[in-house]
Image (cartoon, rainbow, N blue to C red; front, top):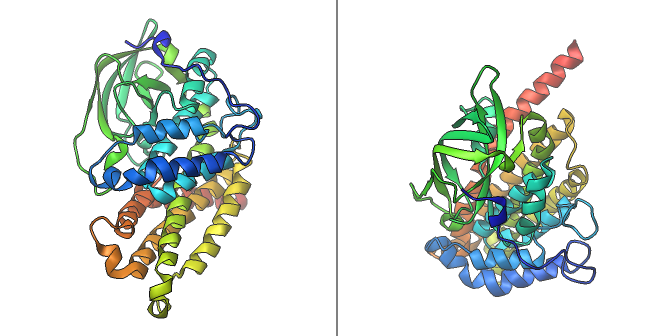
Length: 392
């Protein structure tokens, strides 16, 4: 069983003013350098061969990409969700697999940042922010569970000093032998409740396996996690019970995903503009032209920046706005990828072309939890509740 003393940390402390970090203009140039020099040469292999870009993730951590939204790790001591979203956008424009891994890392660190478990936060927040340890998020199933879409897959019994967990999470990403991920389990007993914790992948009784092959994002280390009488010490608990904690982290969880959607749209617009010199005379007859998509993307960026200022708000109206924004981002990503494929034509239809890759990746933006259908369900229910309150 992994103990707190085994968490791998580095000697590097928080960045200081003037270094690449969330406090100034240094972050995006540093991230763009990693994208150009470390990520871009691997993008095709990540997509076609399923290569896990561990070196890219470490380089992004050193560049400060995982830090802005974490007030405890941010040199200015403030939460900057917008900064993390912008860094993720730059990564996702090149490679959505790595953009998704960035979201996984950001979200796992977001859980730790917001826990009341001071010992866990002290041990894990810094290493996650610096990319010294990798983290995933196993909240796809719990998000659907709390929305009434599917049952919770993990159950536990409370024992002295911790919990004994059983069950199966079919798909959790950014996993490896020395990685960590967030998970929610239901504690059985006279007063059942849900608890959220960080799970070390090296935990005894936890088996990781690859049980399927995906149309895209094969390089994201997405594995099945089987819990067979896994004992988890209380040290790893993020929230018990989980309800108030989930309300606190959910806006950031969803808002951070805008980095994937906006990056997808940005990358597609770039592809469309690349072919304009030779195809504009015929592409002008297509819908969703690059300038039109760029205007819509700018609107979404502005809306994202506005909502990101209040990433901890828990009122229903704010969360509805967040969900509507995320829905718009997913829908625009689909349109942009479709249009990029049509604009690039036969060159985009080649097996290793960026356009066909982005078309496959865009569907992931649409189905990753919360998926488009999930978002529409949540929005409809919240609107209905508001109408009922107004009529009462």
